[in-house]
Length: 496
Image 1: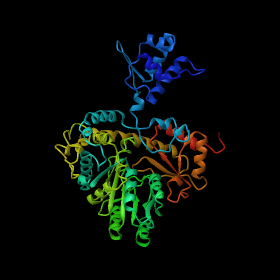
Image 2 (image 1 turned 30 degrees about the vertical axis):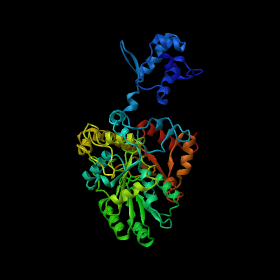
Image 3 (image 1 turned 135 degrees about the vertical axis):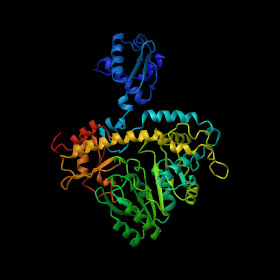
Image 4 (image 1 turned 120 degrees about the vertical axis):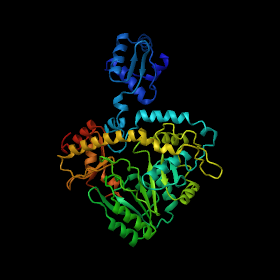
C-alpha cells in the first residue's frame, strides 16, 4: 500500500523548505490532481517514515499539519484517511478562483460560476451509478433525452406556470449547446439579422458570429431594463426573424424583465413572425427574500433554453430546450444533435439532483420504444416534486444565501470607489461603470499585471468594441477574495 502512496506524491521534496511542510504540501497537491483519491487510508507513521526515508518525527509533524487543516481524519486504532477540508466542500466558490486559472493570474474573476454542492453531488453520483444498469442494456445512442429527465423538466415548467409535455423537451449538453443547435436549425437565411442584447453573454455572441450572423443590438441596463422601442424597430423595420434574450437576471447586468415587457415581447414575436430564444439559465438565482419570479416569457413563437450549470455546477453538462413538439422532433433529426447530447450517466445525475433523488421515480423506464415515445413507467411524476421536500430546494436555498452575502459584500467594497452599478436582484455578477476617464481594457491590463484576471465590457458587446467603460465583476468568489480583488483593481495606476 505504502508504495502506491509514495508514487502518488511524486517528486515532493522542495528545496529550501522544511521536509514536513513539503510532505504536507505534496499530499494536498496529490489530492487535487486526483493522484490520491479522498478516502485513501494512509500507511502507518512507521511505514511512511521507512518508505519516504524520513524520521518518524518529520512524518508525525506533516500528518499533524494535514490533520489540523482538515485534510486527514484520524480514528484511534483505524489510522488516517485522506479527505477534503470542510472549508472547501461547504462553499459555493470554485477553488480555482483563489488560485488563478486565467492567463496565469493569481486570482481569476473572469468566470461567473459556482462550485458543485459537494456532498449532494457525490450522493447523486452514487445513486445515478446504482441506477445505471438498465441503461447499459441499451445502445447509448443519443435521443431527445432520458424519458425520466424529460418528464421531470416538463413538470418543473408546468408547476412554474408554463404547461409543458415531455415531448416538448430536448436534452442537450448545456445551454450553449442548445443555442448552437437552435441557430443551426433556425438561422437558415444568413442575410436575416439576429437581435441580441447589448451587453450580452459572450458565449452566445461567439456562436452567432461563427455563423456570420448580422447582429442588431437592444440596449439593456440594470436600472432601466430593455429598450423595447429599439426591439420594435429591429423587428418591424429591419425584419429580424430571430432573437436571443436573457430576461431573468440578465448576464451581465442582472436586469430582470418585468411582466409587462415580457407580454410585449411575446406579442411582438407573434405579430412579426419573430422566433425568440429565451435563455433561462439564471432564472433560479433570485436573491430577493422571498424570491418573486416573473412568469416565463412564453408564447407560440418563444423557445426556452435552460441548464443545470449555473445553479448546480458547470461541470454537469446538462441543458435543455423547451419548444413545440414538432420542432423538437426536427431538432432530433439535425446532424448536430448527436454531438450536442449529454452522456446518459450525466442525465441520470441531473435527474438525481434536480429531482431530489429520494427514490421517487424508481422503476421508471429510461428506454424509449421503437416509435420514440417515452415509457414514463410508474411514479415518475414524483421525481420533479421531490425537490419541494428539501433536496434540490435545500441546495438552492443554501446557494442563494451565500451568493446574497457575497453580492452585498462586493457592493459594499465598491461603495467608496466612485464607480457606478445597480445591485441586481439575482444572478451572479455586478455590471460596473468605471466612469468616463477609465477604460475597462486598461484597467483589466493593469489588474493582470498585479495578478488579477477580470472581464472588460467589450467582451460583452455585440460589436466587440463598445461598452469600454464597463467591467463585469462576479460575486461567486469568497468575501476574502473579493476584498483582495477590489483592492487590486482600485489601486492607483502608478502603484506597483
